[in-house]
Length: 259
Image 1 (cartoon, one colour):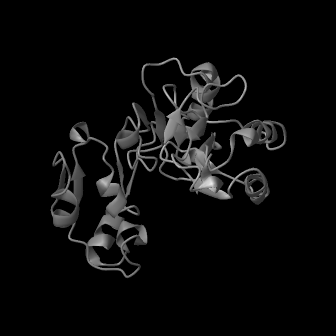
Image 2 (cartoon, helix red, strand yellow):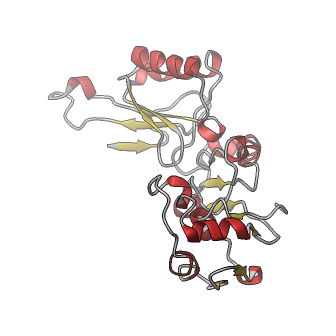
């Protein structure tokens, strides 16, 4: 059974620990208690090997050794420990690993983001700065449930939405651009002639002739594109910034520069 909030926890926090109890501890004494701890993940989920080893060593010592990297909210999930180990785990996380618990129950859940400008060329906003700001501003809402239901923030640097903000958040923050998509007409011709690999190599690394009308223009949700065999035209005022065309022809099309 999942026991959200108030059943078990750590001093001063109302969230971060999900109580789990077996209905038949007489038959399964080794999992009579099997509590889950949610740990606030670093921005962009960047880790050093040192911190990963420390996490694994801590959980081997204090819990089952089972982890989930990461939960759908983004947290590091430490699966399975007993009630008497909760405070020691919390102390070691905060004092030795410099990490904090994430959210659970009817509170603001742990904000999550993609790698953003730290690594991705398509990111239009600083996702990690936004997530850090939200996390630090709303610490009380994150650790002490006061809402009638959970609330999630997720930030994606571009409309590709690699963190699934639209699908999994109550407040989705998506980076975009204000000006026009940049077009390299020579690269467009190269794609049509089969000189460049489409989709950045995601669908195979062999170059092929791209049917721009069929695979790009006809699949545009607002039909804001036109290709006459030589030149690609985009009516940017009708563009919804879905990035399908950019994903298919990344050497020919780029996001705008007014981010």
